[in-house]
Structure formats: C-alpha cells, structure tokens
Image (tube, rainbow, N blue to C red; front, side, top):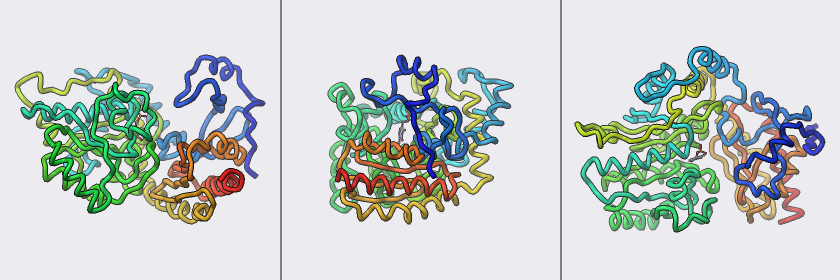
Length: 433
Ligand SMILES: *Cc1c(COP(=O)(O)O)cnc(C)c1O
C-alpha cells in the first residue's frame, strides 16, 4: 500500500517559522502550499517528518544519478571535508578540481579539453556565451554578439540565459524588452526547416556569436524530443559557415539519455559544452563549461585583454569537485547506463496505457525520461495531491507530467511511479478532460 502523506498534521517548528521567511522558487507565495519537510533521503526515496516516504520521480530536478546519499560520494566528500573544504582557484590549486578537469577532458567528446568551473548551470551558460562573444573579438571580428536558440529551449534563469529561452513557453515573459534580443527559431526538423535555418544563417551570420541547443531533449521548456539527425544538421550548418555550436548538456549529460553525453548519439562534437545537474552526482552545486582546443586557443596571446575575464568566488570548490570525482568513479564501476536502458524499457511499457486517455496528446520516452503530455496547461495544482496520496513525488509543469527518476531506482519503485502516473492521469481524464 502506498503510504499516506498528511503534511498538515506534522509541521516541525523550523518549517512553520522558516515558511514565513523563505522565498520559494517559481511560486506564488500567497497560495503556494507549505513545502514538505524532508528529513533524509536514500536511493530513490525521500523520508518526511511524519515518518512516511515518497518515491522521487524527478530526482531533485534530474540531479540524482546514483540515488540519494550514495556511500561512495558521501565518504569522498567527508574525507575531503577533513582536509580542505575550500580554497580560492585564483593562484591556488586543489587536487579535486585539477583531477576533475583532467577526467572531464578525457571523458568529453573530441577535443573538448578545457574546463571552466562554476557553481550553477545558469552561470555555466553565461560563461559559454561570454566565451563565444569574446572568441570573435579576440579573432578580430566585431559585431558577433547575438545567439541563435530554439523554441521550447530552456537554458537557465539569469539575464543572458533568459534571453535565449523560449520567449513564450519560458518563465521570463516579463523581461521582454529588457533582455538582449536573440534569434529564437524553430528547431529545423525537415527539409523546409533546414532551408529556412540555412537562409537565416546566411542573412544574419555576421551578427551571430553562436548557436545554442539542448541536445535530443529540450527539458524545462516542455520536454520536447528531437532526433540525432537534427544535431548533425546543426553541426554541418555551423561548420559550413564557421559558426560556433554550443550544446547545453546540463540536463542530458551524465547518462540521462543512455549515453554519457547526448551528443554521442549524433556523433558530433560541439565547440562548447555546458554541464551541471548530475555532475556532482546531485550532492553539491557545481557546473562546467568545456571548450574545444580552437576556442581555448583564441584566448591565448601576449595581451592581457584577450583573457577570459570570469571567476566565480567558489569556482572549483574542492568538496563539490570531490563529489563529482566520486560520481565519475560510480559511472565507471556501476552499470548506470544499463540501468538507464532498463528504466527506458519499463517506462515505454508502463506509460503506454496513458496514450488512449482523453485529454492526453502524447506519451514519449527517451532514456530515463518519460513524458505524458496533456492537452492543457495549469493542471499541476489538481494533480499534485493525487500523486502525494500514492506515495510519489512528481511535479508536473505546464501541460507536462513527467518522470526522470534516479538511475538506481528498482523495478518496484519505478512501477509505483508509473502506476501513479497512469492512475492519476486516468482520474484526471475522467473528471477534467
Ligand atoms: C537546469 C538547467 C539550466 C540551469 O541550471 P541551474 O543550475 O538551475 O542554473 C540550464 N540549462 C538546462 C538545459 C537546464 O536543464
């Protein structure tokens, strides 16, 4: 039996006091429900203050590749904490950061060899954009300051990142007019789309610093999928015109789609790649912007002003890098990618019944992501309590109900998630569709 959740009955003091002061993410604070108090987490389960547990269907925003509280990551971070919790990266080196840069350079496709660390995904995208703009300046080309990005894209919440998100689907409509104007176009999925895209590049190429895309799955902008052929086309279109291609692998990186990086499935190498989310195994904030050799070399000269002028205070934090090194150990030692393949098979079978429901417009699965798309947005408030009643943590957004569990989830816990999705969607279909 799924455990019952009754958040109203158990409210620790810290929750009541803190709720008066803590400003929640993406929430209307007047009506936002009090968040659920999580005391600990293990594997795919969250343990709440009232003694119940929830199976986590979204892996804390897709970060928990190895499940919560993995002993190897915990031990590595503890050992590092005993020696050196933090030291600045300006002028001082720490072993976990150097080792992680070396390992990421080896792991990343092609000659993506130069690693710049930040603390959040958004900032790693900001750095990628700065790199691309300065790449052209350093090469003596002026006026290349705009980015080409795509409908349904999501690249983060900071200012430059907002400017390359989908302007309508995104959560940033208010800032139109304030943000730099970018070139946001549909993903070229067929011959007509490709022709229109090439035409745009030919007309506006001189303004463009780079093309940025989330490979294979556009995440927070609507969980839209595309084929590897789209990425191969973008690579060719960029190469033919000397444009930079940036892949934002913040969500797709580290196995989520069945390969370490999504770009591997297209056999392409981007000029710049951003990573975060599962980079530290979901334990500490960390991100990386990784550049190919030719991008890095554009910053080398005898003049100080061609250097990349960026340096977050906590960049290369030893604890976060120790966690990431431990996470990479686990990818080497444990069958993560096979687990993703098994999750993919089960999601395909288990979610299929949703397709026949009235009000469901699509069911799709790629890697460890399963999506049920509804015919209308804004149903989250109705859906969420029904999920909690079934002992699962699932957070629909827009018109999307999705699962992206930790890779270590077992068959039964995954079935609890998929049953909850099929049951609740069926209920929604009967009562609301
Ligand atoms: C989450 C995400 C970001 C932003 O990362 P934050 O750590 O939330 O700043 C950027 N791009 C993609 C594709 C993401 O999924």
